[in-house]
Length: 146
Ligand code: DQA
Image (cartoon, rainbow, N blue to C red; front, top):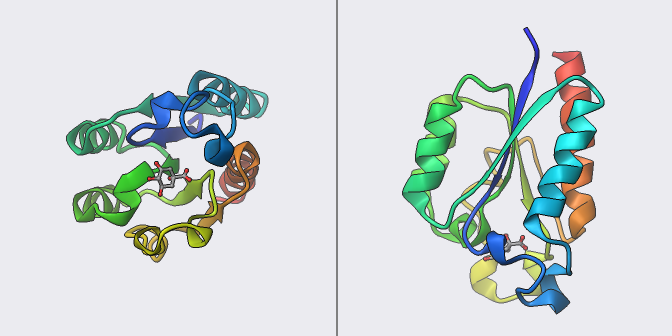
């Protein structure tokens, strides 16, 4: 069975490229999705990408793709608020990496708590675009080992 990875981005990440570029950089979300999808394709791994600004949209998409093997997830501001998304990931039992473009620990105190870090394999924080790529490389290695 070919392996399948999910790349999921939460609220406001559709604005990447123009949103607070001093914090998030200038790469657009389609560019990130294309780059990551290509990295997986080179390893014959399918990658499905999705972004939503709503909690329900993200949860429904995860439920629909529950048979997948791995998740790369930037929950955006839901990182700091969403028990429902945490429960969704626990419910579908999918191994995942939490990604943040910015170093949330250098920012406002309300960004210092995550509902995902303690249930993730790991978190990649503050490395910008490279964080997505590093997480993808880890996922490839993880899938080859499992
Ligand atoms: C973010 C950090 C969050 O605190 C913020 O709400 C975002 C983006 C990041 O990628 O750095 O929307 O997840």
